Length: 261
Length: 62
Image (tube, rainbow over all chains, first blue to last red; front, side):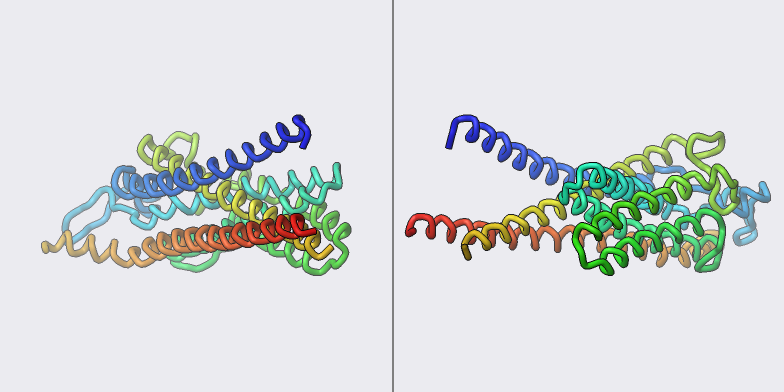
């Protein structure tokens, strides 16, 4: 092996080792941050009032005693429902990004990266739907409401599922990659719409609570941000593990072919 | 338990299954997925070492 090749090989190996280390550090950070965020949400963050209290401006009678600020315990779901939803948007961006990179370069690695990002998106989309549905049932007493945020997010869920249906329905590798890349880019358009819809079309059921007067206070924001960074780290970890798995699989196949030759 | 605490508990406890359900589903789902992926990756990496060894032996014998 020439000296330049050896140096290049050593650099590449070092990068792989670094990435692996980074993945495990991110996994530990994800666990610690999400756990801390959730504990803060329950034990430190200021409890929220019920929507009924906020809208009437008054309290309720409990056992003949007037309680001015009844606690909305179900609101605690916010601290993990919103982080998983934001992570789903963030990871889905990479499906569109790698799709665009594939269309520019025609490098199959970008198609694999886009597919893996879509897989991770699907996990977080399903978690968002599950946690959201439980919250909807508790807070509003129904399993589903056709309000703007829920509707646009439901469309996003269908688009992510359709991405995999599309991939499964095309046999030719090149065509499948092109169709999936274009579809991924178009599908991603729904993500910023769904994210911003509560600001564009104000809804009582999905009030804007970040960066507005009367929104999250310091303790609530801290719990939310910590949980959110933890979830983003989870997204990164799952993506990295799946990407490494695909690369190892590819290398095994290549070596098996070399063995057979 | 006095009447006020009793009523507050009665109000809060119906939400507990939902909150606990969310925790359990979220953590279990994520952890199981990460665990399964890690174990699958470990198996593949062991397989890779075996194939690399086999290739190295073939190179020595040929």
